[in-house]
Image (cartoon, rainbow, N blue to C red; front, side, top):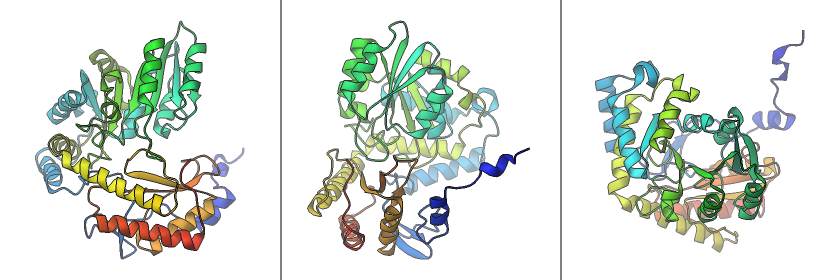
Amino acid sequence: MTDAFSKCRLPREAEALLASSLYPFYLPVEGRPGDGEVTVGGRRVLMAGSNDYLALSDDPRVKAAGAEAVHRLGAGNSGSRVLNGTLALHERLEGELAEFLGHEAAMVVSTGYQASLTLCPLFGPDDVLLADQYVHASLLDAARLGQARLRRYRHNDMTHLARLLEVADPGQGAIVLTEGMFSVGGDLCDLPGIAKLAAVHDARVVIDSAHDAGLLGAGGRGAGEHHGLQSAVDVQTITFSKCFGTLGGAVTGPRHVIDYLRHSARAALFSASLPAACTAAALTSLGIVRTEPERRQRVLAAAEHLRSGLVALGFAIPSGGTPTVSLVVGDNELCCRFWSGLLDEGILANAMLPPSVPGGKAQIRVSITAAHTEAQVDRLLSAIATVTGRVGPIACQE
């Protein structure tokens, strides 16, 4: 018989990259010597790739809450939520999250990816699922594991979405699936357009707020609140690994929907529950999000400084004002050279290559957090200018 492992070969281009000094992945971080900085390869560099937007992963209160929970409840729960792995802490976090986001109920799971997979039972055989072209891989996996007919609409193209809704079988249920803040480009979904179409066609709206919950809106509730349309969001998923500075995730929505998922979502039913340390850390972070809006204000001000600085350097920056910006390089090797050049300048950014982005759209993603000072943002801009001059001009995200 053919060796089943014979397929386990990287493409030739990837093999060459892996063997080169330009390989941009799995770089181990050795420490955190200062705010907004990490140590890699024994060097102190500026972290410009983290999604820890509110800089809560290193907040003393968050770390203390996690440590106390470990001492009191152990390092793990060794069981699924449905059997023996539910903690009182989980239920407290669920109650506070539901109240915070304006939903009836919430279910806490162990990762943000898992929160997406928990949606699978919502995508039934009598449904059509209309997903933005740029939704996260975890949401696509949930769509493929579900049984709904999947249709993709062009990114934020409401004309295309309207056409897909118009030709959908009226006897089927319709669900529109989008991210609130898109993870690669940092742009926002057109929630006003989606909500209007959903109302006309009796469709449900599901938003993944992995990157925007905690960051956007007057109270930090995400893209829905930012647009003044939080009530138009039927189901909202979040992760704790961005603004909340720890690990875990949750899905929130109407009580009967969450109860249904508790008893039918295999991703949650057959997985060990979120450890106490992460749960306590997320609870503490949620309290900080609710009571310290200045953190959001600080990172969004820094984001504006970054974006205006990139415009001054000649980049055509799209509107949005979020802390994440992607610079489209195009060619994979050139993108890795740009990434390596930034690292030489003391900047750790993200190289986004296919399949994370479409073919021919390799890009450098930079993110800033509330920990970054104005001087550090200027340092990032200076490094981008230097490397652009060395590697050659590139375009910003289209």
